[in-house]
Image (cartoon, rainbow, N blue to C red; front, top):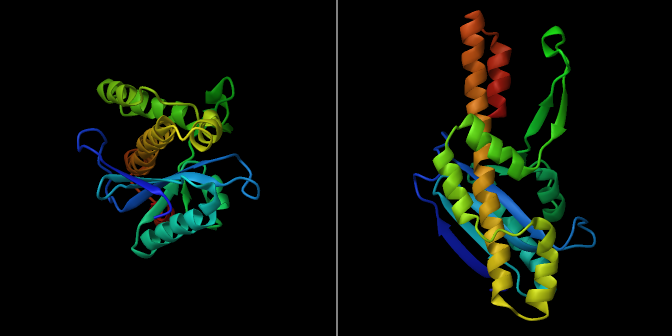
Length: 232
């Protein structure tokens, strides 16, 4: 193999169940933000059905085309098996993997309400950082301080995504320091765990919208049902 492989089994009590559960979440670590100039150095896939995270690390950047091809083919295999494919800011993953309309987006937006909000129906949306969004989901929506505490514990040593290229270059390529691999893989693992909550929130939101319509109006247009079902 031209890459290193790590596998993590996720305990049942760490993450809430999503039904249906035939999803994978994809997360990439790269040397930068420009696909024509930068390469993928680490790729993680969270199989939500089997509750297994597999992370692949590229030790030799000269093999980056083979590595990209492997990750791309793996994702397409899951797609052919009937899985829904997700990523936070999916455009980034699709650009680096040369995919189009394969990966669905987990991006969460802040709703920016005008003041006073009650007098107007208008609002604007603002993109939210993944860590900020998932903190909000766990603490304010799932309302699970114990889960947040456990994620904080396993996140000990988590490095910022902005440091990943430097760690790969200076600690791994120049020094072959195994700690560099551990830091990059750990970063990818924690991101996948957090992104799972964004996926859970999508399914919760759709269920809540259906309940709200039923509670407020008692009737619901068929096209609304179809639109909500298409999202899922």
